[in-house]
Length: 337
Ligand code: PEP
Ligand code: MN
Image (cartoon, rainbow, N blue to C red; front, side):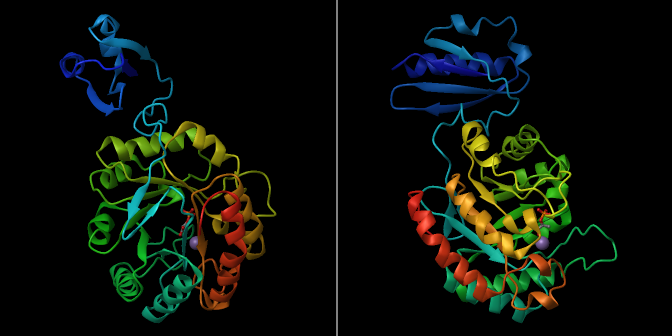
């Protein structure tokens, strides 16, 4: 629920509404515009049932937000958010390119990849140190040792780094190294984990669950934001459908749908969406055309020897060509890369 105050009302009138709402046990989030102030209400709005808030001095109207997510809701925060990550940002005019190996395998692998993706135009290095693999017998990641390799690559290149976290313990360790946490598809509705990353101020890349609706995804973002961390970026990585030609089905329509519902930036991951390296370029072009704020692409110096996701990984050289090919598409969408 959102309370829209009348234009140019006094601070006293705003404070009065806020304190009455808070007396009912609800939280408020104030957004002061040049003329109009809006007050977002977070919590169980049924508590306000008999409050007659609309009659208070200075209140223009009450807008019922039917969606249960508020902090992620565009109605409450109309201008698109720009999320700072390390020495770069996601959103605005820039198309952010995140690239790197599925799994961190060695210091050399990470360093070589970092240097080459930076030269191609990427600003964020990705790499998995904790790998929630479908099979317990698959490589599970180098954990803290891998994070150290990532940090060394950041030191050498200035790239920001993003790594997946899977538990409270991994959050504590990764927070010493990373510029951004990733919550993987398999954990999108791990509400405990979402709350834990929400207690930090480290930006979070929240991947869409394997079979999650957009509404469930935005509620997952709300879990993070309602703990006090506003720095959330959404990543569409394909959903489960009956189609088997690709690993998942890229829901390209998710981008305009999200843009109509939320102010949070949206990234497309064509690597996990398709599982096939040949489809990454066409879907990256599509992502830019529909208004995505960036791409996450898996790159490995030697995909044939990769410990995970080799078939969908680009070589650094192919990745460089991809960035070059995408630049005019970014320009066409009024962005730069
Ligand atoms: C990843 O990005 O490394 C990953 C495991 O992706 P997802 O969670 O989307 O499957
Ligand atoms: Mn992967």
